Amino acid sequence: MALRLENKNALITGGASGIGRATSIRFAEEGANVFVADRHLAAAEETAASVRQLGRKAIAHQVDTSDEAQVNAMVDRMVKELGGVDIVVAAAGISHAHYGEEGKADIMLLSEKSFANWKKVLSVNLDGVFLTDRACAKAMIKAGKGGRIINIASAAARLPTPGVGEYAVSKAGVWMLTKVLATELAPYNITANAIGPGFIKTPMTAEIQNLPDVTPLMQRVPMNRMGEPVDVANTALFLASEEGRYYTGSILHPDGGITMQ
Image (cartoon, rainbow, N blue to C red; front, side, top):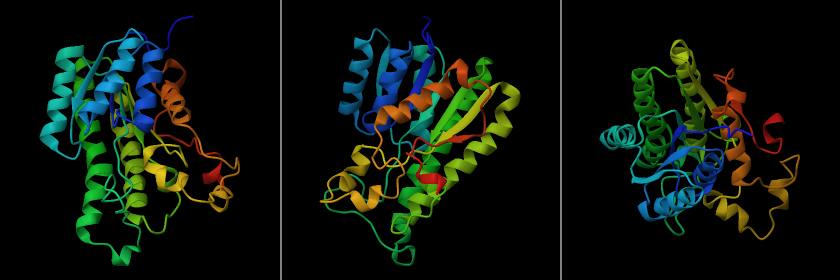
């Protein structure tokens, strides 16, 4: 049986861990070469090594997706070394301004948030997706072969999330950005879709996973459990493959049913 992404080149931001890593490996299993971009180069190299073990080309690249020059350089390098961008999965993101810093969760009402922390989350989660999508769209239009843009939003794009309001706002912005891009890029045979995961077992949800009792939280999820990164990766694979060719401007929710409530 033919592989679904044979000879396609995929750029995946946030590819060093969680959803980005799972998507990198899942795409490689289906024949794609993968450009693994992340803030953490060593971890990105580990993902790239896993891709190469599957017989695909892989490049690890360090990038801050909120930096315009770095994003443009990232896409330029991919075009030069792999020959083009067929698929982009914009998975880089943070849950709060101090994400990754031990014991510094920024959980509080928006009325108490600092502007600096608000801007930090929006710069990564929304500006970073815009910059990545824009650079890839330019490359896709120039190549004239169409393409697939897949943005990782969140169930929080639809559900107000107290305590991390800036995260919810940023993901709602990603959802609207995706719809605008879908409208603008359709004449170029470029689709743009979003994925809005629910609670997924990733480093971002480590604090939730480590709660003494997650039962009250899981009661909000009809399937009563957290999802796995591969659940999101499989959704991205569908959107990137021929099976998903007539989807654009959509948001798909691998979330155990939480957004239907």
